[in-house]
Every structure is written in C-alpha cells, then in structure tokens.
Image 1 (cartoon, rainbow, N blue to C red):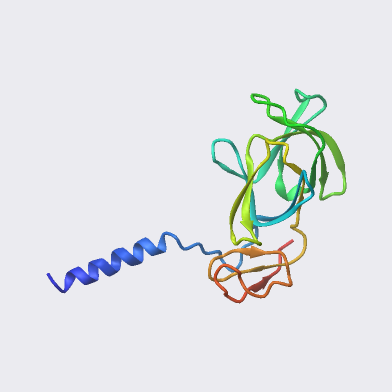
Image 2: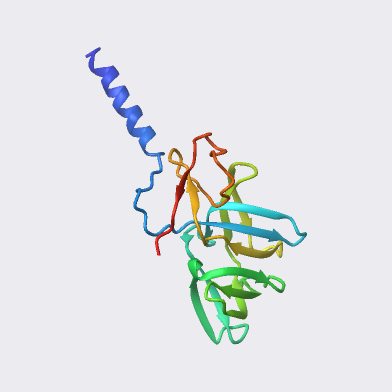
Length: 186
C-alpha cells in the first residue's frame, strides 16, 4: 500500500496540472482570438492580446451585435470580429435594457457604416503592459475606439499559448519563453 500511494498522488497531481495547460495545434487554421488596440475616452491606449467579447451572461463571443437603420434597429446583425477593422464609439451609452451605443464600424472590406453597437458586455484580453487579463467594460462611456490588429503575422508562446501581434517582441513577458512566428492561413 505504501508503494501505491505515491503513484496515486503523482497521477492525481499530473491530472490536476494538465487541466490548466492550454495548447494550440500547430496547424491551427482559424484563431478566434485577436489583438486589439483600445483608446479610452481620455486618449490612453491599451494593447490586448487574445481578446474576445464577453456578453453580460459571461459567455465568450467572437461577434458583436450591431444595429443599422434606427436606434431600435431596422436591421440587427451578429457582426463577426474577423470582419471588423475598427469600432469608433460616437455617442453615449444607453441605459439598459436597450444597451446600444452610437458607433461607426469600419469593416476589413473597407466599407464603413454608422449604427448602434451592443455595449452591455466587456472586451477582455491579456494586457501586454501588465501581463495579466484585463476587462474593459463597454457600458461606461469610457472607450473611444477599438482597432482589431488581425492582419499579418503574429507570434505565439509555445509554453502558455499567448499570442503577440507586436513582431518586435521576442520573448513571452509571462513566462520568458522564446516566441514562435506564425502565419495566418488565407
């Protein structure tokens, strides 16, 4: 029995540690995480890697709801993040239950539209300055714009899986591992 206990302890420890490990396949053809450059209402800039939107229920989303036509939405779209180049918030946040803010959206196709963005959730990602996860709530009139930096190549940390769109960065600030350059697939 004394010989079995260390083996069982080791198996339990390895199993618990493996649950926290995040890995990405080498042939990842679609990466739903983005780097974003966020400018707040006072002009400060934040760069977040591995970003996505979270709705008020805490669900991870790779799209935002966007209305066109009227404030109530003649047309309402789930606008995929990969189609967005830039969001510019042009008005004040509306109190719930509506939760839509006037916004100009520029698509990766080059087209621009004015409408209303659902700002009831938050934008989250790894803040490259602090090396921790950050939440930027959209419903406090605190953000001026969000620019998606998903064109071109990026680097990935093979240890923790973090993505970096700053090609000047050679090592992961979180675990000091050398970054590996990645090329997005068309």
